[in-house]
Length: 468
Image 1 (cartoon, one colour):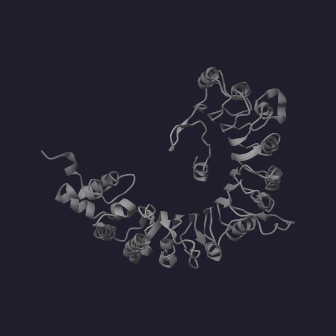
Image 2: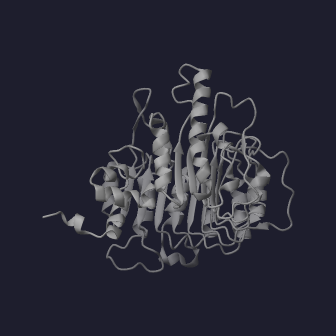
Image 3: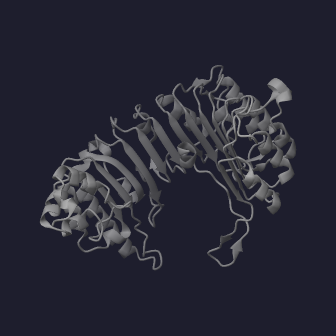
């Protein structure tokens, strides 16, 4: 009697095969889709004739060291037929070269990788997404002009041994008609080529390099040139050459829903205030701001002006990181955002007066703050004790299970590296009717140099912030 799976029609078998693919596709024979071709003739035929199984390519250093990589790559591309391609690249020319600073080996690897990319080039019109880590000398050779099906471009550039000889920058064509998501980190970019992509809905720019340094003027111009942006992450890394002129009318970004702005707070000349003083985003739902040790004190005023100028924001998520003192600045921001449901504060001064203001008291009437708050996340905040935070949690949790009057039930509490929490109160907090409680006040990390680190930076990246 034959196994049940062999009685299934080919169409159903194709669907089942899709769920056999590993999380990270590779060219090894012990994983699908190659594994599926080693079972029997029928499975080989069904798998080989299923273009979707072969439409994802993962190119990394271990895979590229295989002697059979060129025929395998060609096999994948043939079997993918006309199906859209998703290419994930994770290669570094410096892998195995840095130890010996071998320039000859460096150039040899450069040629090998360019040969591999040349195998893919004839299929550029089918590329749906291209993402991963890539040496800049190869990234600039990609040639996007024929990638008319490209929807997602997500690249992290790698600095190289010869990177200082001349700036290497991506040059996007007149327009990639289907490109909606563009994420670049540690790369150069021809600025005008970005402005051609009017259809972009999601843009992430971090640690941009020559000739595309990111200052406030550039950031504002990006929002002006790309009016269809729904999501934007802007990593400021250069002070303005000049102050932005005072604008009688702020630039309105009509479709922006998610905004994450960060800057290098160790640069005392970098000031993010001109950016927030130049725009308004009336439909903004999520806002994250992360500065650093030398954050300008006036940033809070600029942030509040931005929120007020944007009108009655439907803001639900607010994340603050490395912004120095929050009291009374954050209080003013919270008063201006009554629709807030998620509040995150990392590495900033959270004081007892701020927490007392968050305690829900029906007798206060209209002076209450953030009645819809469902999530509180504090990380690296050591300026309060458990006696300050516990009343906030108690006031926003139903003891009887009945709905609270005028305030939402707190659903999530995350406290990381908050040294003021005592073990006995941690147990009490966990017994409250809160769906998700994470308390990591005594968290440690093994150092790669030996010993334990008693301090871990708590940083919520932009992708986590956009996704939650």
